[in-house]
Image (cartoon, rainbow, N blue to C red; front, side, top):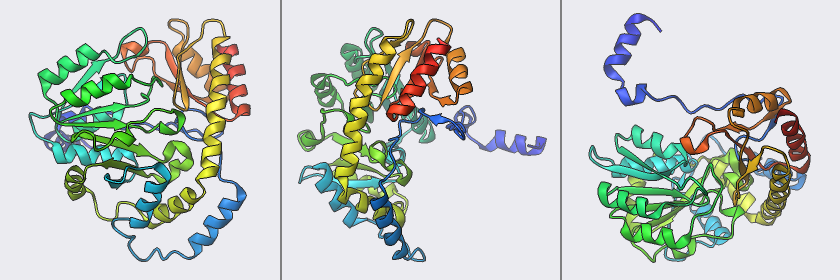
Length: 362
């Protein structure tokens, strides 16, 4: 960048944006990719053939349906969305978080969440010019520090509280009674982010409508459709009608709409893959626990957070990468994540390769 360009950037780009780092996605070429919580199983050939035939019928010279009604109906049926709840679709959950923040933004308004948590809550709060408050989880088990959380809600009176259930990056599920306390104490909106709902049996989706300020957000990414970039928000129409006003036109493209409709008609295939991941998660956790110096934490997601000996996280990460295994290093991201890495549950072969490499690195 030239000196003149840099001067203009400094003059016109908001300081809080210049202070951020862009969301980083590492190059995974040639590696066993276990860093991004993806479903490791591809579509079976039968589904691929159906998708190829479907794609031949699509006219990409026309805009997609702006509201995607057919896809919404498929989601309602497949995900058991309560009859009284409205749906809003996003280009991934990230776009939905951004829509919520833009609709609620104000210079004195706060986004509140727990930490360590999903980094996009903080980043999008900054994008929208809102204040941000992160309440630390308990250091011993990553559970909600309910008294501290309620105190922060009373002090900051947040416009929106985001809580991931199960939590990312820790993988644990929070106590539902504590979440109810948060919903009832919050003066504004509470969004329960159930991105990892396929990997746990707990959900607040059936309780949407019980409180006027509860919304539940989900994504189809973790269940095997990450490439489609489709998220959805369920809740009272009074909220969603307002968020729809800041949704960019035609945000769900025609390929995503039709591919997701096809996939949801074959949800049994995705459910079988999810069941295999849940079963493999237990085996992977046991294998990690058997490695000297490695402490895996309980998970109800499709990943496992684990701690390695003090000061060894970067060396272990680099050692795994040298052995063609890519995981996520979290050491340094938050004090509670010291010496921690996170691994996605892969196929049995991928997990075996990871465990063997980890034994060598530790």
